[in-house]
Image 1 (cartoon, helix red, strand yellow):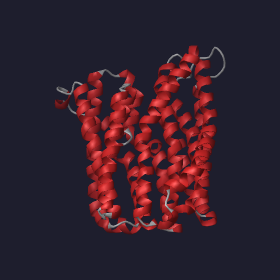
Image 2 (cartoon, rainbow, N blue to C red):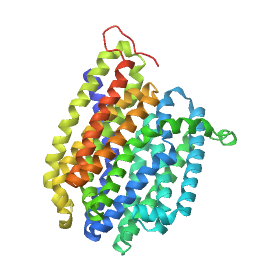
Image 3 (tube, helix red, strand yellow):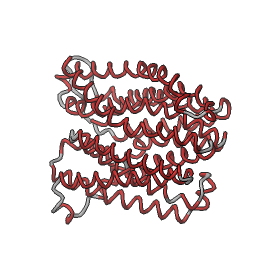
Image 4 (cartoon, rainbow, N blue to C red):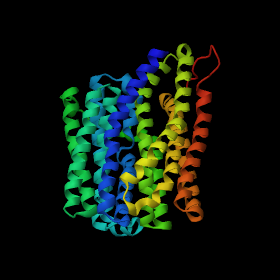
Length: 421
């Protein structure tokens, strides 16, 4: 057990470090943007990135999770065909959203409080994000840690360089959008070259891609893929329309510190999930070890949240400009929301191994609906704090719902085997 925990800790530390390279960029950006942009302009950027994040699973149909489900069942030729099929499907979806955005630019601009001429950048950025995260998922499960790290370094460095150059040359929030798209394009280009060199794509490109099969999976699985992105977008839209763009900027600043905790949780999940999937094949023999590791992970979640808040207290005033100091008291609420999300994703991993798509989608959809309802009334009664508290409640309830789906599929008594679908 000691060797296992040591190995998982080392892998978690690596993936946390790799993910933190990209995740640290919003803090570096905050140092620049909270001093170069007004709260309203920063609120536009926060809303833009939330919309991009929301659209990403719609553009990709969360195909990266299908890759995780079947990665160890496929050989290199099958993985190459999967990647080719995913590219075709994602490109078709992105083109559709670009067309819809161009046709409905004016009503969308009014509904989203964004300039009509810049709306097309949202599906473009979502497409690049979808491709980038597919490349990350592939290299994670292929255990190509150097490539995984390299992708983060290239994308983050390019994004920061482009954004800093444009913002300091008075491009405002427009420069932030253009710079982020440029950085994502650079990361995707390099990652695609590495992927092509590592898989036998020669004959695959002449075969018909499995678009219909992947689309059927993606549409059924979509509520699960939307869970992580629909909630922050819902919160930002509610804050924007109920409280205003300036309050959305404050919400975005507080959410940065919650996102920092998510980076650590995500790093642990990146290390834990491949081991979990391999171990669950022998659930009967490794049951006790699997449960022990899960309990340790669950216990670390609140401890990590407390540590993050202790660090945030002296760090926040240094990073954030004075005109955003109204966000400081919101930080512990944002961190608590991320911790509650960790419980939910822990349970979802067990369902993902079972390919229990419908239960995953139902629990995720419940989380989305509960958060929307709680956030709306929370904003009216308690402002931004009410919205952050709503996220905590929605994720905790969803974690209980997903646990109710997990328990029947894994018999926990000694001598039992895993319950099959």
